[in-house]
Length: 215
Image (cartoon, rainbow, N blue to C red; front, side, top):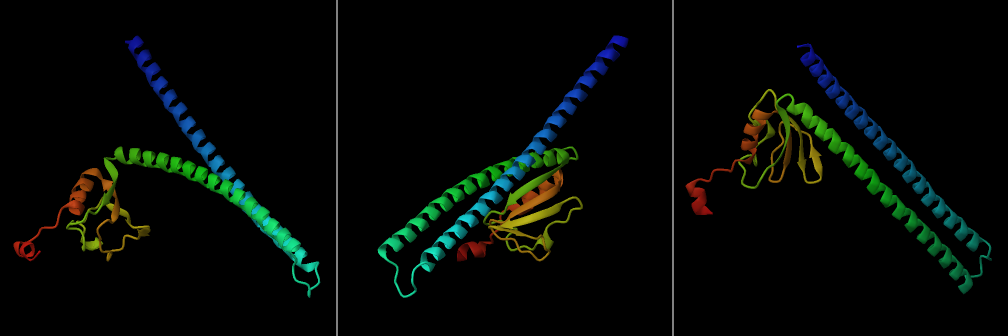
């Protein structure tokens, strides 16, 4: 009996220690990711400042080039060639800096996507432990929900509409919002009620015989 108790305690301590270790690793990875994002933002800011400096240097060169000749004398071919070379050099430097800026922006987006993915997994786990979930529903063409107002959704105490996405826009879940084909509705709530509401959004509109003949 005592051996069984000690074995069970050892197993529980092992599980607790493993969970603690995984939590520490997750937190450290998250902190490290945020530090990387901050560092990349700093590099991006430095590149933008450098682009401004190159543009200012070019402006100063052009002013100096034009200002040192008599006002009545037009620019010679040598002067024009020097101006053209200065503009080309500045353009090449700015393009290289912009290329680096784009690469940094891609890295920032990737790190942010990893953070979002991790947050979504944690949110899904939290909801699952409470028999809840988050649902993304795209309203198909022919759905009976098309033309319906948000206020006409079957009411539920546990369902909450997080947002409605329409094209590139996030729409506030206002009561007078009218659903259109292709709208993406994000719902949060009890899983059983989410399943019922999914049917409401995706069920097809009934066609009457007269409408079928006229079509």
